[in-house]
Length: 105
Image (cartoon, rainbow, N blue to C red):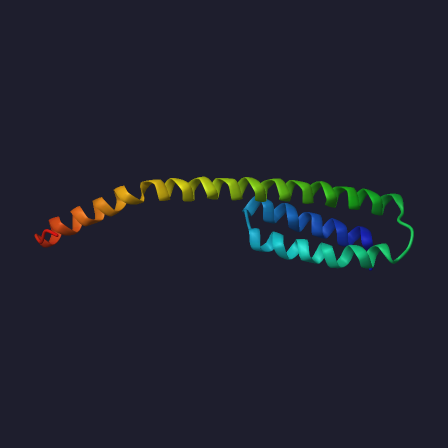
């Protein structure tokens, strides 16, 4: 296994998934990293290019973690807002239905 090439490819895939906000792809890449890193470590000493590729992968992984947390917080805010507005939406839907059918509840 060419550690440098593998790490650089995974780093590029992480970058693309972050840009696309493709959380499913990020989860798959995370699983690949978790599987590949112990195998890479078992191959022996790392050269400077491999260490640089590992550092780049670590930095991109940290960015992915940060973006996932931001997306989770944003989704939580949206869900909270939807829950807060639920009563108004139900009243609007009931009023709209009454206007269309002429039947009052």
